[in-house]
Length: 251
Image (tube, rainbow, N blue to C red; front, top):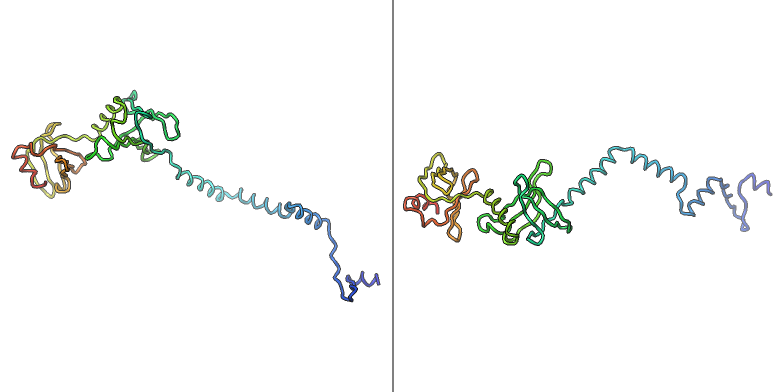
C-alpha cells in the first residue's frame, strides 16, 4: 500500500476519495511565506522595487519633469504682498544717487530697505494725492516691478516723506497749465495746437480732440496729446475771448 501511494502520488481518504498529494515546500517558498506573514516584501518584490527606483533615477526626462513641476509651483508664490503704508510702518528718503528709497516693515513683520522705489497715482486726474501705489522699478531680470504697498492719502506719511513723494509725482506727471491758445489747425487728420503754458510756449498734436479733451465735474479741463503728454486748464472762463473760441467747439 505504501509503495502504491509513493508511485501514484495520491492517497485515498476515509470516504474512499483520492486526495491530491501536497507539493513539497522548498526553502525559498518557506522564506517567502514567512516574509509575507511578517509584512515584509519578499526578495522578488524588493528587487522589483529597486529596479523601478533605479530606472526612475536614471531617466533624465523624469528628473527634468520633477524639476519643472517645482519651478511651476514657485511661479504661484508671490515675492511680495502689498500692504498699506503710513508713517507707522514706512519712511521715504533720498539715496546717495538722488533716488527714492524706502525703509519699511513688510507683511512678514520684518524690517526691509528698498534702494529704489517708484510712485504712481491710481487716479492721476480725479484723486492726485490719494491711492498712491509704491512699486519696485521694472527690470530686465524680474520684469514688471511688484507693488510694495499703497498710500491711502499722502498725508498718511510724515512730512519729509510726503515732500519727496510730491517731487516724484510732479516729475512723473508733468502737466503744464495752458494760459493761452494761439492757434489750432487741422491738417491731414491731425490737430495742431500752438499754446502758451506755465512752462513756456508749447506746440502739441492731437489725433482726435473730441476724445482727448476731457472736462471734469469741477470745471477743470485735461488735454492729452498723441505722445501721451498731459496739459490742464484749471478754469477755461479765465481765457481771453480768442483762446476760448478756439477750444469751445470741443467742450
